[in-house]
Length: 607
Image 1: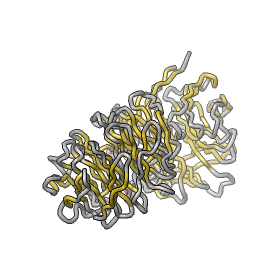
Image 2 (image 1 turned 180 degrees about the vertical axis):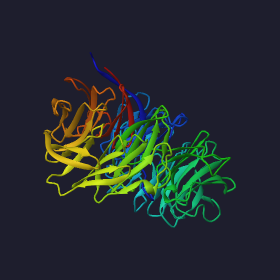
Image 3 (image 1 turned 90 degrees about the horizontal axis):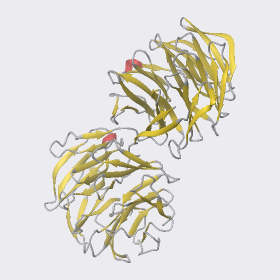
Image 4 (image 1 turned 45 degrees about the horizontal axis):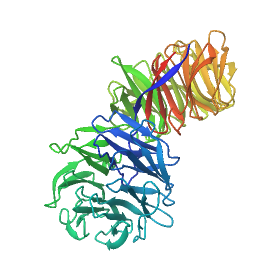
């Protein structure tokens, strides 16, 4: 009876965004994929079908930029420590080819020569702000000098004779000839930070874009200024990114003024203005023109596919999470399963199994969503560090101020049972809610409650404490009665749940153990489950009531068999370099995991 698992689907995170900071998107010379970064991961996404994605998580630090080699065979990615990794794109394993440390500090941009032999990278080095070197030996092929502050952007002309251009926080661009690349002159047309510099694909021009809202055009070979796009200012806000059309006659620009503009380079005028919204989250911080696709990235992390014929309505918007996921549940709606996940910033995502992301309309949680469950009235019950519990209809899909319960103190765990019952475990308090109202509060406790579980039948509320005890309260009408019944976990309780049929209570603890109690047998210990190497943080029961999954700080996921602790399935590295923050089951053979890497994964299990 061998148990096995297979990774069925990777639902990738969005780009990690920061206000006022440009986001570099990497284009694929073959035209199939595009690249961006989130946390320690590089995300490779299919541009025609963005539900298809691959995640590369081998940098030990936050990755800031990734760019394909013009050959299409390798990707170079740079991180905040100054490491550049060059890795294979053709194999699923993404084998590391070379690793370099051109300078110590954050890498902000990378560029390759057209022969895929030389790489330039720039950023926030301590002794220098850029380097250009041979891809296979790391030996220098010139000096990136001429700036007094952080370099934000670099590009290399993709035709000979080679030229290199950089843009910096010192308000200047710099022009280099080579190889070996030597500083020729500074360009001082911008009055504020230069955010982006890009050569046209044919090498005849390059442009610079700045925080002053201006985009300047120059001769690609001599560096002589030709024009300012739009005459005076190109945008009403800072320009964060530009990307050229494949035929070098047009370009798009992304701005903090919440628009993307499409420019006719010869005429120097905007052909189309794409209005992306009115919220601060609609600021545009990155863009990419690849084949017929025009992409932009909003501060929200949403990726917009722009429609030239309908500039106020994108063809599609890719939603999802850009911040770490903290909570998870799965629910069937009209016979279809949906994955609900809550993140560090309060955002809740709705994911269909085909990979389509959606969200609730209106204003939701303003802080980390710690726990979620769906009740029998098809409401998503969520608790958050904003000190609220929310009840949101999964069919209406909109937040409502009337479906919000303000708690006295921060809630950290919720569980649901039939009859509109919700148990909210808060700091120093246990609260019973019924039909979206607080009906009973236990406080002045002699222990710190950490997690709770309502028996599916609603008769018992189990509360796990930091003292390693589980207290079993009986639910009588609208009250919780302490009848002095406790059972012991092996350490401070971290999570707990009853099996769907109510036969078992599983409890995870900081001492790396999962304990399962048999409910009908007066909560005697059914089995202890050992295997995790660090504290266990989350668990979820299979709908078959015979298996459950646990996830720990050791990055491991285990699938356990209730009757036999030795019959277990280990999924190591479920989310590489990140521990699992949530587990849920779609059916008895399908497990979903989420993590601080902001991605969702679907696994097929065989018993």
